[in-house]
Length: 210
Image 1 (cartoon, rainbow, N blue to C red):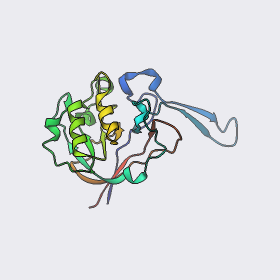
Image 2 (cartoon, rainbow, N blue to C red):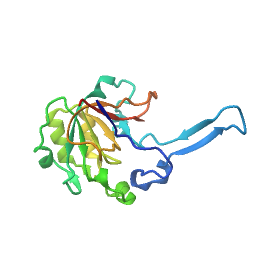
Image 3 (cartoon, rainbow, N blue to C red):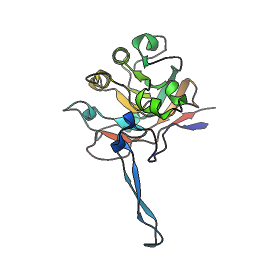
Image 4 (tube, one colour):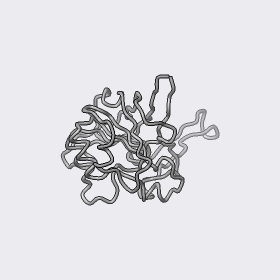
């Protein structure tokens, strides 16, 4: 068995969506060995920073939050699909060349996983466009994850999110897939259990039987 950690490290200088300062995590010390007998830290972080799951409430005014998420939907078999040859965006045409079946949870691996330029990672990442979202809706997939800070970029009205959310498709963002080959894996991506929120961080891992 081989385990792949596909989660981002959390620290102040990490890549964040569009480089927005308010999305940077702040880690502070509440207590140390000079002020007390234990060491304790505090994390102030936007729930869409780092590897996370989005709930429909993120985009849809009357959408569901994460409270009712069934764990079997994020602890499940998945398929990693390699789109590292794609520039700009993943479309219906790209997805139609892959084997995707009803109920699949798919992870989109792109050039994002190899890009060391933080400005590109934050602002010019490869994303899933509206036609790709429509294709996944038609295929009735269970979920989709991507190695980008957002599943879409610069699309007015957020159509990719809306199409997926309206089809009860889970969205996972900010994956790290550089060391993962195309193929089938076991995904473990349970979000932390915060009530009433539209997103939550996950420690996402893939497990491959050897």
